Image (cartoon, rainbow, N blue to C red):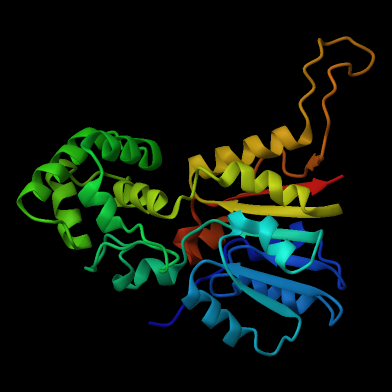
Length: 308
């Protein structure tokens, strides 16, 4: 299958980065290089684009799609390791960072990757296929209590407990191996819900987040990314569900500095320090036209931070 991923809010992200021709930029979630190609188009031969992705297939596709550009470095790693990545490249600070936290259309549509509740494939869900933890391991070895917690916390699924209970009941009889099997189990508990999508949508999201550890490091990743920006540098982050957005928002607010002095004081005495300013007081949302053209942009939110 061809690696297709229509970049969400492309113009808004590029404008948010305020790209300098000779600057150094990071696309921390390179995917199919949709955002990366536009960044590469806007930097000169003296500029640099660092493309990071934990999916080796994405890196291969990006190399092909960006083969006309000579000032691109490709890194097979997790954007959570951005500090070490830059250290290994002997780069101290950069002019801009983009993180698109969405799952690519290719990963969702390619059944062998096991991300989708549509079709049938082995329960995998790994963005980085070199890691050990898979969806199959989560589904077949996690306790009922832990499964329920993950499905509730990461999937915001109100039927988390009965779903976890039914998974455990089924795996006593036979190991759960495929996405189709898991969907069938979930559908025993959750019926089709009007305007809420597929019955398995929330559970699959939760398991994917657990497999790829998408939430726990995010706050620290955002703070570290801000630290790695030059003065005036921009961090643009696209989120696709409330847990991601909350972590990003909290990291932005804390990095901007929160004065806790009583109102009325002529100046701050609490010692609050600011790393920069939040450009987007409210997140930027996709236009109606974009949502019509690309339904997967519907839940996207873009937040932007500028370093002092």
